[in-house]
Structures are given as C-alpha cells and as structure tokens.
Amino acid sequence: MSEKFKNLINGVWKEPDGGKYNENRNPANNDDLIGLFPTSTEKDVNEAVAAAKTAFEKWRLVPAPKRGDVLKIVGDIMLERKDEIAFEMTREMGKVFAETKGDTQEGIDTAYYAASEGRRLFGINTPSELPNKMNLSFRVPIGVAGIISPWNFPMAIPTWKIFPALVTGNTVVFKPAELTPKTATTLVEIIDEAMKIVLGKDYIPGVINLVHGKGRVVGEAFLAHPDINLISFTGSTEVGKRINEAGGKMLKRISLELGGKNAQIVMPDADFDLAIDAVLWGAFGTTGQRCTATSRLILHKDIHDEFVEKLLVRVKNLKLGYGNDKGVDVGPCVSEAQRNTVESYVQIGINEDKSKLVAGGKIAKGPGLEKGWFYEPTIFTGVKPEHRLAKEEIFGPVLAVIKCEDLDDSIKILNNTEYGLSSSIFTKNVNDAFKAVRDIQAGITYINGATIGAEAHMPFGGVKGTGNGHREGGWTVYEFYTEWKAVYIDYSGKLQRAQIDNY
Image (cartoon, rainbow, N blue to C red; front, side):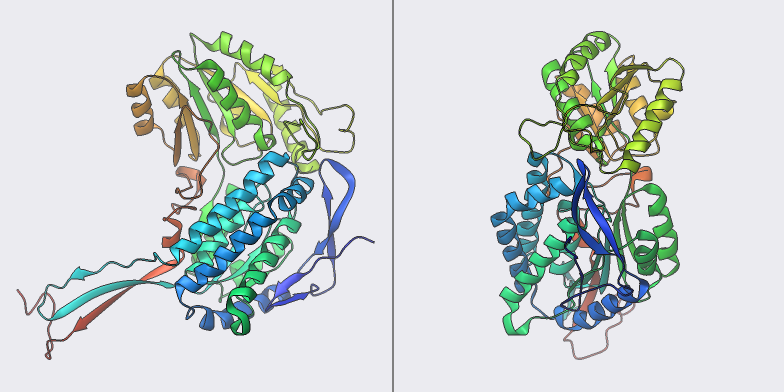
C-alpha cells in the first residue's frame, strides 16, 4: 500500500475534502510509485486561507529578526538533510543528483539570506520641509500570499517565494506543482518544524499552509479568493496571463515569472572548449527543462561549422539514465506529456525549411531507459530566426543552432523573440561584451558563462513576455512582499501645512 500524503492547514496535516488522491511516479521508472497526494477542492483552499488570515494578525507582530530566526533553522535542517532531499527530488522529477543537490543548496542559500534580511528590512528617513517635523518610512507586510510553483525546481523556486513572504510578516498558502508534491511536502514539514522550535509555546498555526491539487481547481480558487492579497506564480506564459487578468480585476498584487527562449552567442575569438561546456550544460542540464535553458545557439558564420562539429562529438558522449545512478549526465523528461511535447517540436523542426536534424531526434532506447520518459539530446542546424524552433519555448532537450553575420546581427537574432529572460555571449573582446550587456533585451546576461546558473542573492526575472516586471531573488523580491508606509511626526505644537505654510 503506497503512502498517502496530506495537506497542512492551520497546523494540522489533513486529508483533502472529498478524499481523492493523485499518483506521483518516478519519471525514470514509471513502475516506481512514490506516493498518493491530495486532489484538493475549493473547500480546502478556503479553509487554508481562513487559517492564514487569522494567523497573519499574530505573525505580523512577531519581530522580523525572530521571523528570520525561523528561516535560519530551516536552512540548518535543509543542510543536514541535503542528500536525502536531493535523492528524493531526483526520484520525483528526474534531473540528476548533482543538480538536485544544487536545487536544495539554493534553498539553503535562500533561507540564510532571508534570515539575515529579518535584520535588514530598512526604511528610508528623509528631512521634512517644515521645522520641528520628522519624516519616516517603513515596510509593512501585506497579508496572505498565494504561492504557485513549478515542477522543474521543486525546492529552490518555492523558497524564493515563501521565505521572503514569511520574513516580511506575510502568511502563506502554497500550491506546489502536481508533478513534484513530495519535495513540497518536505519543505513545508521543515518550515513547520522550525516554527515550533523557534516559537515554542507561542507557535502560530496557519502561518504556512500547503494545499496540493490541480491548477484549474486550487489555482483558480486562489485567484477568486478575496482574502488572498498577493500571488506569486512561476510557470507558462499562457497561465500567467490568466492569473494577471483575474487577479488584476481584484487588485491583487501579482508577480509572474514566465517563459524564456534563451540564447548563447559565440564569437570567433571565444574559448571554444569553454563555450561548448556551457552550451551542453545550458541546453541539456535538467534535460532542457529550465526557463533559463539554452534553447538557441547563435554562432558567427566564420566558426559555425567547426564549432558544430566539436559540439556533436561531445553530445554523443552524454549518458542518459536514472539521475541517482553514478555517471548519468541527462535524466528523463518529467512526464510522458512533456516528452510528447518535445517530440512534436522535433517534428516541427524536421518540417521547417532548411533546418537539419544533426543529433538525437528520437525517444531514447537502451538498458534502464525502457520504463522512463527519456528523449535523446537533440540539435538542429540551419535554423532561421523566424522558425518556430527559434521562437517558441520547448522545455526539453532541443537546441536550435542559428548562423549570424556579426555581433550586431547576433544581438538582433537573440532579441527576436517575445521572451527576455536569460542570455549569454562568449567573447574575449571587452568592447563586444559591454555592447552585448547594453543591447541584449533580457533580465539576465552572462559573459563567458551558460544561460543557467543564477545565484540566490541576485535579482531573477526577465523582460517582455517573460514576466510582469517583478523579480525573484536578492533584495528586490522584498519589495514585492511589502507595502511602504510613510509616517510624519510633527512636534512643533501647531498645525503646519506642507507646500503652503513654508512657501
């Protein structure tokens, strides 16, 4: 009998309303049933939001440094359990063990960063224009935060959202991705444990709530609920537009981190070996299932053929398999549906005029791959900037190679997409590097690095169709989770009218 997991609502682990569950299986071995997870209803969401709303009145009054202490303990527990968390995450979503350790470490880094921010929620004080008067400003929490996270970084991305929300004094209702519910459960268990350690007898139930379920039920309930004050979402552009539309009608604060169609440029003076290492990591790390994945490779015409030849040699040596096995470079797609999407885009690429399939292009076969959703690392050359392979997000191990004339042309090609998340250029020319930094339309640009590899203390997010202007990570995310409050203290003993009595 497989283990049944539960929701956490108001400090209690509870079965879902209606008693329905969904299977969670290992994408590298579909016979491996990880557990049964709640298929929650609107009633579950309503109960969780009510608990969070009640908890907010107490949690907002806990001193911010003490809220930070909770997250310090969360980081400590995650560090102690790092290998265990990573092993189970690989089993749940497929990427290799080294990557899930990195995913977990990013959560640890975010915990420690958020803990320190409990002592750095600075306001700004400025002189008054009137005598005997003081002007202050403070950041205050907003209320109940609805958190909706994706499956590809099932530990790191929820921590980007939940930890800043908590340390700034908000309470949380968390809906994780349906494909990675166990990692989410582990995270919430750790947060709840840390709450009890730090607060002791003053433990506040309902500060963190976990509601598993389908987006069209639980997610829609988030959008409709009047007591969810802000929503942070990472996922597809299509869903993000829906959230923005529905949430905007209720004046909810919305943060959207959406799709990407990221490119790596390689100029003739680049270090080829370094650039090849980067494109392999960027295109096929996490099986290409990252919003920052390198899905386009823009090569200067003078080096195109030589670079592709060397790249193909390296791609053929990538080992596919179960990510917890040693020596594996690339895991499976997260699900059969995701692999089908990849397969459909490969067929699109085959049918596009002048594009040429030069590596992969089929379901991976072989020992240990029979029961998983594996797909060969795939490369197309001859791709044109207007092709669908060059413009649409695939979220799989497919790389489109595009030839460019010069630096200006490469930047023009890179910018020719509705997205603007991550970007990269390999060059030893400092002038070209700075021109790329200036002219590339993206929230992130790497010089001589892959398009993946964001650090927890830096802003993360994009421009154009990649989001709505907010940022995850670093100091900038704390702006999203707080409101500014201006305070004027007049000790003159008389009514002073700004802009009137002083001019």
